[in-house]
Image (cartoon, rainbow, N blue to C red; front, side):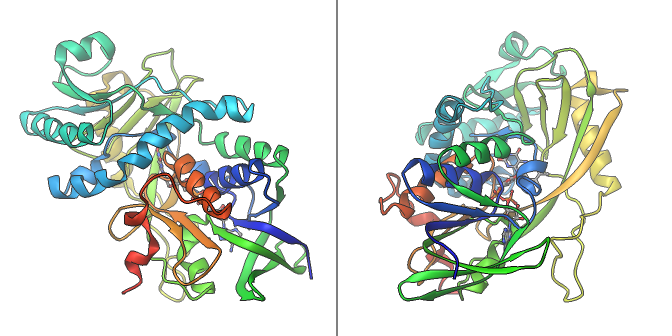
Length: 394
Ligand SMILES: Cc1cc2nc3c(=O)[nH]c(=O)nc-3n(C[C@H](O)[C@H](O)[C@H](O)COP(=O)(O)OP(=O)(O)OC[C@H]3O[C@@H](n4cnc5c(N)ncnc54)[C@H](O)[C@@H]3O)c2cc1C
């Protein structure tokens, strides 16, 4: 029998790494296990947008859906604060830049949507306002004249998806966490009041078992599978998404740009490349059993690349003719009701889970709740709407 830990965190994406750091900082003995390498999956392949206003996917189905999505706003506000503090708290050079975000509108219907959306967001305490074209000319003159208004949120911004999780893994190590990579959790069971976690080294194939008072599932698209290992229903919906990045250009834009009428996110990385994303789909391969195969690479779709590029060029004319450096895909999860899934695993004492939606942006708030639950602290926020128990009735 292997070592006993206060907590085993499953998953070395951003969420698992921040959670392990927070548990270690609380004085907990924590093991983080990752079946691949740190940051190989969604956390290392995303757009790095820190979007605290409601995203397009939350408003495209109307205001009732937007009001529902806004119930997660306390987690957005907490994440905005935590991201700004992470570099100082960890001593890591995490490239966080919260220089503001714009959700842009090109016609009257989109402007009306922005007005209604920002009213909902302000009611939850988000600092956001609608600015007209004169306002856009003052802060974002790089946007096409087609853009007539925007929702301006000063705390939005970006972080570098390639470096954030590794930085948090280093911080976790310094806080006393143990990290095992190429190490897969094969089974989870409860015995004698604690968790038995069966592990396999994917390099040499050796098996091991450790025990823990708590287990944290921070496993992204594998969350449902990990839930099944303990007999719990943790439903997730996988989404394969497309990203592109341009060659470097001189500094043009310092904001995160999203669109009120379609899937688009634009930002310029610190080294000058323009990142283009916003949720255009890729094709998720199916395995022999007919279920998505998360170990296979999703296929880029020509229509997604073309659609994403056309929309980007329309609102940022500077992009026309600019060569793309590369395009790639990643797979992420949302939940069936699009609200985050964060909290205790129903019927499984000492087991906690978080996933769903923009878990890069919200990773720090999810981790704060998870680390608190591991330490026996009740969350400061009302988390009842995000509890997995909402799915327990099937
Ligand atoms: C293309 C794209 C763009 C996106 N853009 C944004 C954005 O701009 N902003 C934003 O907020 N969000 C964005 N997202 C979503 C965001 O990337 C994810 O919500 C977030 O990264 C999830 O982090 P995670 O740590 O929970 O999961 P992951 O990063 O997927 O990490 C989970 C880890 O668990 C490991 N694991 C699974 N099963 C086991 C097991 N049995 N044993 C051991 N380890 C296991 C996996 O190997 C994996 O490394 C985007 C996603 C994609 C794909």
